[in-house]
Each structure stands twice: as C-alpha cells, then as structure tokens.
Length: 343
Image (cartoon, rainbow, N blue to C red; front, side, top):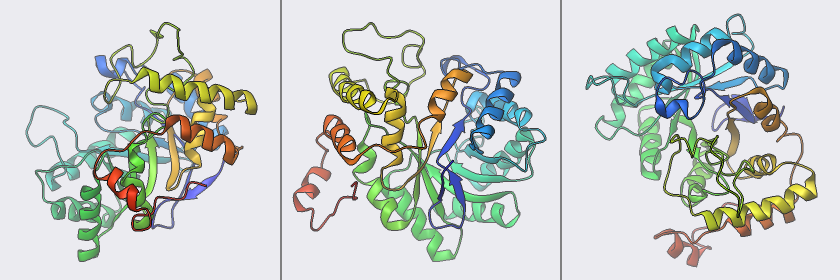
C-alpha cells in the first residue's frame, strides 16, 4: 500500500481509506448506503488491514452515531494498527446547539465521538461543512485547543468553498493555530468541478485532497450503461445519492471511454475510475466504501498499478465540461492563471 504525505504536515496516510457510512443504516437515507452490522464490519476492517488500508473514515452524523459505535466495536483491540478520521458540524438533534462548528458543539461532539469509537484520540478531525454562523476564529481556536489537549492530532475540512478554506488558513496563520492539512471533497471523472478552484488552492497552500464518493455514488461502478435499465440495488436508485440530477449522456460517454481503457488494462471500470483519481494533483487518499466483502476486494485492486498518460488523456477528454464563470474567463488567460499540471 502506497502512503502519501498529508498536506503541510509530517503525517502520512495510505492512498485508500475505508468509509463507514454503510455501517448501521440508521435511517432511510443511510439504509440506501448499507446496513452493515458489527460482525460484517469486523470482517471488512480485517480485510482492509490485510491489504494495508489502515485509515477508517466515519462521522458523527452517520446514522446519528451508530456508524462510529460499530466502527469502535470492529477495531476493538486494534487501536495501535488503525488511524481514525471522523467529522462534526451537521445536526445531531433538533437542539440549536447540537449543530455547527461552535466551541460548545465541537468540544461536546469530539468527546462523544471518542466515547463511541472507544479511542483516546482522533487522528484526523474534519469540519463536515462550513458553518457561516460561527466566527472562523472560534472554530479554529477550539480545534487548536483540542489538539493541545491530545484529543485530536490533525484538522481538516470538508465541502468548503474556496473562500471558506482560504479564510480559515489565513486565520490559522494569523494566530499561530493549527491549520487544515486536508480537504475532504467530492471529486470523480463525472464531477470535476473541484479542479476549477479548490484544486489550485490546495496545490498552492499545501492542503491535500481526500476524495469522497470517488465513484460518484456508484455511477462509475460499471453498472450504469447506455441502453441498459438502471440498476435498482444502487444508492442512486434508493434515494441515498448526493448532488444535482445526472446528465446521463455525459455519464455514458465517460463509461464508453472507461470501457476502452478497462479492456486495455485488464481492470474493471471502477478500478480504472479510482486509479485515474490517484494520479490527479493534490489527491492523497480515496475513501472507498463497500456493502460487502466482494465490493471491497474489487476496490482494493485499484492500487499497485498506473494508467498511462494516453489513457488518462482519453478519460480527461471524455469527461471534460465547460466551466462556469469566472473559471472559463480565467482559462482564456492561463499564463496568469496556470492550471494544475496533470501530466
């Protein structure tokens, strides 16, 4: 398993991590992701460790804490072999103080996550989204205090806009507080908007990318094909998907190119999709999920080999889309606004 350095830190993480949103199935939304119980979770955790996947990603909001509890049971006795990433910010109840990135909520939710996971520290603690109601200074000061208290090791953000991240980095620098070392973001061959601003920002500011939904909620799994009835055993069909409506013509054009590359490499469509991401600038880790052991084994085989430059260019051409303003205007002046170097 390859390890990569996480942002402007001395910490290294495996290029694959295992996402546990499938653990528990505590409501209708998360049931569409999966309902993995403790026994199955334990088997999946051990399969990951056998393959060198030591980082496990969860969140307090996943099934309202059930995912963290099941992961905690699955890693019992393995604390010296695993790295834990979890998140806070989204609502845990209807109480107005059980949401957001206030000092009150972060201290409380960090303690709750530690208890559910059965660990004494969290390796990467993410702000699951930006809280526009809480001063950035309050959030970052609280996180810095949690690091000083030994409760968390590194901080990261997720689903931030460019200005959210840049303002946060500036505040950390101003006060000498811990800074975000990674941005957990939605990115795939089907969803490349991340490249327009967040990737260049990450490259310039040494903020690594941890990719969530690298197969775009299963759209790039190989099950979605032109002229074939949409699969019903998928998160998209069962109401557990994120994002705007799918442009199926665009998706099928990408899948056609993936089919060609898959045939050339002897890999699956999903494995090619994941490998493409691992060769993008700033990307250090992909969060892979699985409802069962077979899905996990398939995803684990996405590493240990690389697409050729020509194969990457073929996939880039099939998945490219015209950017919105101001990014299309900036691309007219690439000498002033250089793009990340993909090749």
